[in-house]
Length: 338
Ligand code: NAD
Ligand code: WQD
Image (cartoon, rainbow, N blue to C red):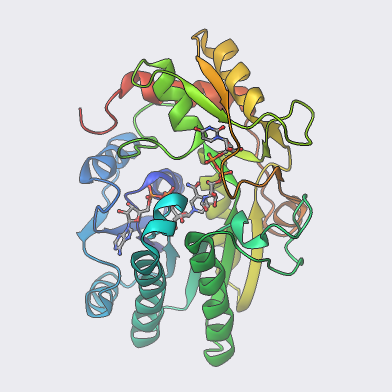
């Protein structure tokens, strides 16, 4: 079977490509390197000893997607291609709506033209919004998002729900990721943020290696055990295995199904900092700052549906996540830029 990874040169895409290739799938990656580089795909090939069919293209380009699909004849499309920086989406909402929604539309149109009918979508826990209480369950109504990035995910879920009604052959799996961190245990692939990281773990790693002076913890006065926010951090390799299970599930699937991909275990910002320091024996200097606008105090998954239906559950611990993040950072202090 052949799997088409739109945005597959990125953080989650490369880890998923490794799992797919190691399990006998062929992989096509299409990326415009807006937030990645070809070196990441070269490392996927190095790790697996297998070739990837690699295309540089904008996934918004429907004709290019149709051409590539006709040439490659994939069985399933996984759509990772998106812009994902929450703060940037507030500054540049139109760019986010255009890129994220157009990529989804062009993939669906190309699939319809070529006759590819399995689609797996990178959604996010952000679609639950601020109103639902954690743990989040898939049958909760979606909530009000707090930023344009979140709204693009919520809108794309709606577009996909409408598409399955109109195109009965289509099968759609919505995967709502929680907070992916960590890296492949080889240290050859990992998260490579450009500029100042927005997310906690890359920031912690860059402080540990001396690229940033100190971490600011955004608030310690929340109604949580240690006052800092709780999140459901999930190892990116566990997440990648979730995609493998979703691909197997989608083989005989029509209609639309949604799965949380999280561990179901909440950890605080201080848990991350303390575990990172203990496991890696490196100091992480931090200070307590004000709350960050839009942060929810608590966000974690009920992960039971993925276990029951996909036969998937996250296995790696917080210590594994901190160890593998540091291993990647230590061996690639400048990311993929040598
Ligand atoms: P990433 O930025 O590392 O990967 C996304 C990839 O898509 C990049 O390689 C980028 O160059 C590519 N891309 C973007 N727009 C494109 C376009 N128009 N044409 C071609 N390629 C394009 O991000 P990631 O962390 O791997 O996330 C993958 C997906 O998962 C995204 O859709 C993201 O919104 C979603 N997601 C991520 C997280 C997270 O915390 N990492 C959480 C929930 C959901
Ligand atoms: C985690 C915790 C911060 C940085 C985001 C998106 C979400 C999803 C995953 C895509 C929070 C705290 C962070 C720092 C800190 N992405 N923090 N100092 O906000 O839970 O989720 O990424 O879909 O949609 O919103 O992740 O890593 O930014 O923050 O104290 O310098 O770390 O306040 O409690 P978040 P994050």
